[in-house]
Image 1 (tube, rainbow, N blue to C red):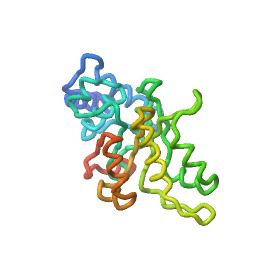
Image 2 (cartoon, rainbow, N blue to C red):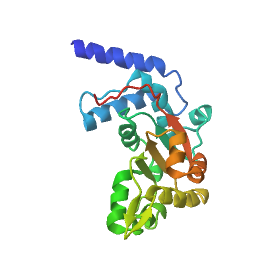
Image 3 (tube, rainbow, N blue to C red):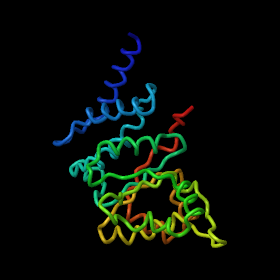
Length: 224
């Protein structure tokens, strides 16, 4: 009984924070759906924290293509998303949950940046083409979320060193300008750290390609 009471108080508190109900969506219902799916996928302890409401509201407005709310939040629906925040704040989890609310046209695959670099060791430069050329066949995904950008390292293939993710993102920029795809990213890195890791050219491209949505850096590690 106590757990049920705490859950009701939690939901009431969340609902009180969501003051904006758009003409198209009831975001209290959206949050309830995400929390329910989160419990199914990640266990019964999963819950949406009050401190994260404003960040999740922006994400859900984007993936639901809510033009009215996105305009209020200065979010460009033609761009992708870069979700930033400290380790353990739930970036990957939220992006996986947001896949459940977006349209088929905007579906995306979450792919670890480290896994892509390991693919490069095995497959070489074909890996870069695989993730940068966009949708070739109707059965292929063209939108990706590159998870944990910055955790990978430069890799070598037959002695040639390559910053794999930088090359992929620069190639995807050209397709983004042509209006053919979107790119999503999660990262623990700050803007300065991104520039140090990938150079000013890529940082400049990313400003054009993605909307920056960030967790407060003081958010606690939810995995503890």
